[in-house]
Image (tube, rainbow, N blue to C red; front, side, top):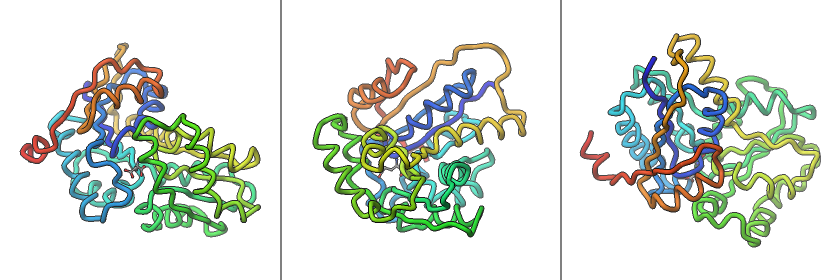
Length: 272
Ligand code: DGL
């Protein structure tokens, strides 16, 4: 089916999911929208995140997407049920895939989750994990500084290590933790620093890979795959600075992000 897959996030974080989608689904075209101007979502009240997410979804629906990936844990926690009910296309979030991936690898059944304040407070991960298995000990920790750090493009600087170290300090007391879920799509960009603090015995899980697998399974099941050979041209939109977005994107993606279009948020609103 010759229609794109829509991917949304509060900013650049969803690119970590987009990268996996491109790798696992090389014929599919993506339209990515990052709401950089209003990032971070993680410290905003629920009604604001819901409103912003719906505005982003409207933009992508106008682009005739065949499937929506909510590549943002915060938006997934607050809107997945609503969007599944509201839209006639398949809607995939990142929380269930992240929970599944963690359960697959844990041996001690002691799983930690880090995410934005909103995601952690929503308890969406413990709910998703316990839905699969009740035999788990779950630790969670909000890391509100991580997403703004990534979004600033400064995450390779020395002070990042210090921030990561301090933020993960509370988890250091729990020696049985063998699996850590990166419950925010921005965090894979600083995964090396997180791994260093948590130690080599802790498996770091980012939901991108499992999310892309779920998208692949749904495209197959609903016969939505693009079947001919092609190298798709992906589209990238941001409500913030296209230059900074492009720089971070090119640091992270294998795909050359040569053009990023700026979208004015009023336009999204007036499109409604
Ligand atoms: N990337 C988003 C997530 O996965 C959150 C970043 C933010 O706070 O906006 O939760």
